[in-house]
Length: 394
Image (tube, rainbow, N blue to C red; front, side, top):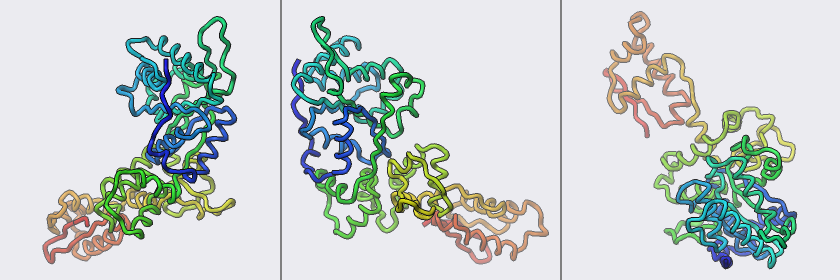
């Protein structure tokens, strides 16, 4: 069996000054022979850094990207890993492939001081996580070639790196017990990139239409160091108001929706400027919440991009007062059409004619127009003199 050559990823061209703090943190754990889970926000761009890491020369890196799996199964996982090691999976069973994987790693370890296997997007396989599968992966760090005269590989020569958007003990608590729990409990949080590093990543992407420097700097700042968000911002046709872009909103929605209830409530409080005494380790670790001081008052907590702050303000559930809610529901159901005063009286006042006056309707329209919900969602109520009202969204 022959092993593959060194990776020739484009990220290798980023140079020694790219993501220096991240590289330092990764190298410290690798040198200490600690396998670990890289935890980050979805789409932040950790896979680019891992390809950059795989081009470094302080260890022999094996890069396994689960995005390349044809189906999310343990069998296809073993096939992919064996192929990356230069083996021929063919029609071999999982047990046969695991044996060959260990032989290949043992052979590599005879010639290298450190072997690092990177499992990029590992949490995509979470539906397959069980105690036996995770134990088999853990066993790769102490392989032996299977010969009676052989000894195990020296402890610490093989390190495994996994990536996930949530710590593995939260994804598969039942699969982590005993030695598994200890092995998969070392987390390294990956924060968003600096604007400088994110701009370097752009330099290895296919050529884009030229952007004025001030515009690029503005979008880099608004991305908050999040790679996928930056690409959506760069492609947006609504530069005057990015939150009107459907794809921008979808990206921000994804960043909120994958969190648990308490984390979402924390983001909401911060976005609204409410008092927050403590933020959990995860939100601070992945950089979704920034802390501008070592001992901050609550006002010093902020979200990693003002776009997320505005998105939460705009899309948070707002409970309108009863009459305002009835009126808004009626107008929205007839978006763009003039709703007569009689229709409004019938729906909002529901036969209580003593309160259904032009003065009361005018006051209700005024209150609804002034409600923050209307402004945040770009709703405008237009008056059709002596006829009724219509709702539009700009």
